[in-house]
Each structure stands twice: as C-alpha cells, then as structure tokens.
Image 1 (spheres, rainbow, N blue to C red):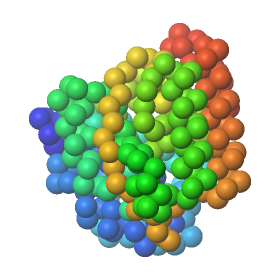
Image 2 (image 1 turned 135 degrees about the vertical axis):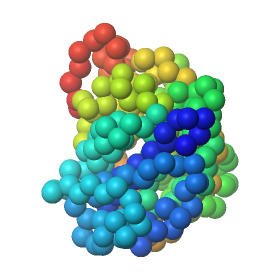
Image 3 (image 1 turned 120 degrees about the vertical axis):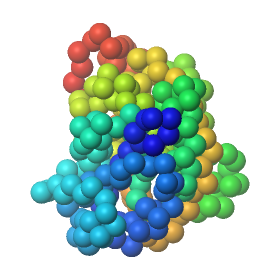
Length: 245
C-alpha cells in the first residue's frame, strides 16, 4: 500500500508457467494483492499461481486476451483496488517498475501510466523486438497520435496502470475480446480526457515470452486502424453509445 491506496497487480495469463514465478518475485513490496486470471492454459500456470499465494481465477474456456483483461479489471475493482497495474506474466517487462507507475498515480501526477518499450530503434531491435513488429508499432503509433491529438511514444505496451476512477468510468466492457482491446482502452481514456504518463521500460524478448504471430499481428493492426477511425468519427465520446468491434 502506498499513501493509503490499495495497489492490485493483475496478470492476464496464458501458458505462463515457466515465467510466472520470476515475474511475481520481482514485484515491489508495496503491492497489496496479485490477481492472476488464467485463460484456460495447457500448463501449470494456475497451480503455480496458487502455490505463490496469488488470487487465482480460471476461465472455463479460452476467451482471448481482451476477455482475460476484462476479468482482471472486474476482479480488481471488486477487491477494492485504488490503483490497478497490469503486466504480462511472461517476464518480458520489468515488474520492479510497477513501483513507479503506482507512485505517479497515487501522487496525483497522472491517471494512467504506460510503460514504453520504444526509446530508440537500436535499443528496441537489440532487445529482440522483431523488425516487422518495431516498424508496425511505429506506424500505428504515428496514426494513433494523429487521430487522437496526443503524442505518446507507444500505444501498444503490455504494461499499464490505472487509477480506479478510470476503469469505473470508461466502457472497457464493450471492447473486443481480442488483442485490439488495448488500443480501444486507450482511445476511451483519451476521449474522457484522463492524464496519461509514460515511463521507459526495458523489455526482454526470449523464447518463453509471449508474442503473437505475423498474421495475428496483421489482424491486430487492422483492428487498431478501425478503432482509430471510429474515434476520429466520434464513436468513443463519453456521451455516445457504441458497439464493440
């Protein structure tokens, strides 16, 4: 807990047995609860989570990355979180930095924090990011900044933190159950005018780290463009009803 605020970390997990313990062990002591949502893994992810003392929820079928996050945020709000940090349990992002995400929000500087992987092209590629992912990330982020009027360094990070009010006010339940969920969340946040901060986050690409393949990346990119165009047309305004993609 930091300054009287309950901090919950949520881990949207799928086949994360080989990296889960390393991820959890690096989380800061200020974290009050860790919720792991297992999206019908084929390995021992849920069992390891219970052994580590996490709050574990298991889906009875594989619902997808977005569906997993929906369960994560619902449970975090039900458990009384004031600050909700989301990190992938594949040890690609550095869990120790959750401390700074939480502090920036608790101290009132920002409502949302993002961990940006893109500090330089050389560093991103040297860290193992596939070149096609790097260039797609740059192009999509350029497009998203243009239609939103923001100037974020990256829109596609898997390490984020939210003030409770943000998840209470935006309609994340209407988002896709697939990977484009992340883009939709940020466009909703922008539409509501919440303050977004960024922290550079070194990442590790290795065999156990999760990654979507080329064709799913293409699908994600097209979904992101469609989401940006819907925002441009006003579909994500807080006072306007919308339908998920």
